[in-house]
Length: 152
Image 1: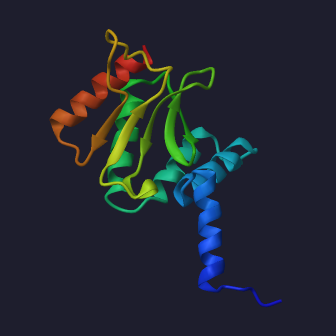
Image 2 (image 1 turned 135 degrees about the vertical axis):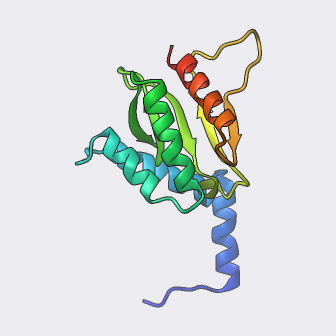
Image 3 (image 1 turned 120 degrees about the vertical axis):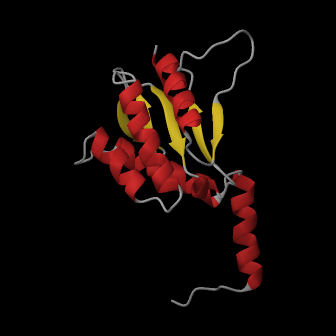
């Protein structure tokens, strides 16, 4: 059966997508999360390494270094994937932090993000995400300190 691909049909499909409120990238992330929830042959470390390996540069290099910094600074956190991104969780499975590659959502920069389980509370307002464009010794030291504090 021939599929109708007229501009009008494409516009209708796009309008349906817009009505759901989710971009194509967000839908892809949700599909990745569903796959993660299904049984996997890889352990958490293997899943995180596979997610990093699938990235393009410069995200891949940033993610690999952030992965090493988190493992060294917070050995109590376990690597895994979360919505297709490398993430690091408490023993009970709560994601503390994650690396979001720039390309995933067509952003200008990669992000190191922290979730509710992160112990970063500082008064009534504190950052939970950091833009990451390059890793210098100062940035690496900051990441190590943040991750150590976040992990408790």
